[in-house]
Length: 298
Image 1 (cartoon, rainbow, N blue to C red):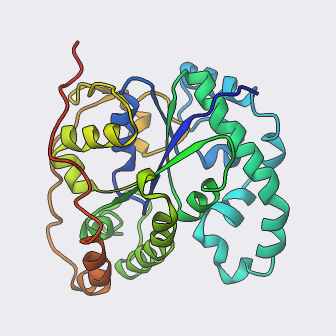
Image 2: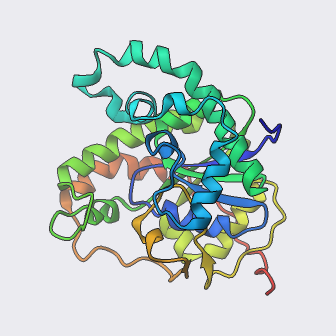
């Protein structure tokens, strides 16, 4: 296995927060590779979700360097280590024993996986948009990588609206379910975020990134100690991440289109339930410097 020690930029937060777009933008910077939702490597048996010849060849090359990965293929690492759904009542009986059995192999294989991605891509920075706070807590003690934790938060009205059963094509959930999901995600994420050394954590709002992408990306690059130039934000190559937003299947090039529109109607339930987090997060940001880097020259 390669001795490469990558910087892993882990994007933590809820679903539908724009992490794939952020990951694509960063992945277009020199010495960065957008790996997508790396947690799915075990679940997907190392096979990418969108199977272009280039993507299959890349992830096959990664798998050849992970000596202890295949024995963990399946859903157990996701269900009992990475996701908060591991704490469901019907899994609690198996939870302590299964985690104890899986964790040593999980940590070893996950560290190997990140180093294999770095070696195969030739990039020193790996972007993982797996979201899950419980996974982030495991990465904090992982040997062989340098972890940088990016806590990405979106307006809860937008998150809840994006799961509206009357409009969402997939992942539909009721407003109450989504509000409870946001509460659970943020309650798990905040202590993980605050436990991370200050120099290796950043808080970012999705809306700020889309409104001022050059400033936000410049701040992230500065935080990571990278002198990479900004990419052309009107022509971003999506690359070949393992898994991510379904738009990756049909779009090989995307453009940032500016700030998102606010949902047509706001949910009073969401406003009330998320008010404590809205107030709390106001003390974590703004987190980016008000300056932009020059764009990458063609």
